[in-house]
Image 1 (cartoon, rainbow, N blue to C red):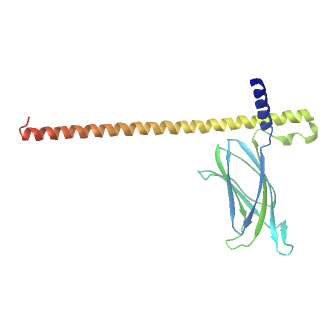
Image 2 (cartoon, helix red, strand yellow):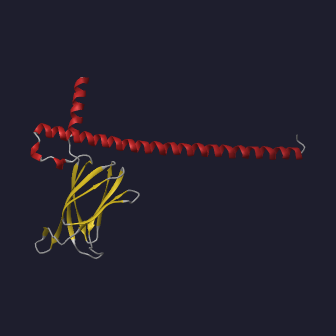
Image 3 (tube, one colour):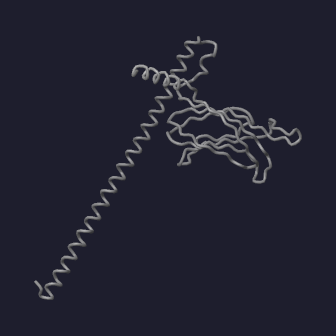
Length: 219
């Protein structure tokens, strides 16, 4: 029975490993409104975003593509605020950026030059793909690989993703360990200071009591 459980576990891990590192979402922007969301990225990770920004047309009562609209995308490292990417883009297209350091990244989108009192309403569809910087699928045409070779390459990519995530977790574990050691050192120092103060207080009280007893000639 233990062997069957192990086999099912391995099969589940393999299934999870082949899932793509892609997710999509859509949201609305009105006027100068800005939408931001955070993504934790390991070091040297490439993020590709395919987006479409459609403007609400009051006449047709639906969202349409307006080529005069510009969408601005800004990516910053958190909490330092270092800007990784910032561009004014067409209403439909793609952007790419690479993380220089591990940690949270804020990805913000808003309408360029909309003004504080702009009435533009946009529906933005965004698909993000996250992969290692060393991966480059554009070098090989889609039809050049057999089905088996394509699966092997996909598995290789996923193994790289897992390795990158493990490296990111190790970095977080190291930071947590450093903070724990620093906290413990401060705690020990504060305890020693308290003991010294307590010792000085006790010695002072004993000396005062001794002088009192000597004054009263009780000792």
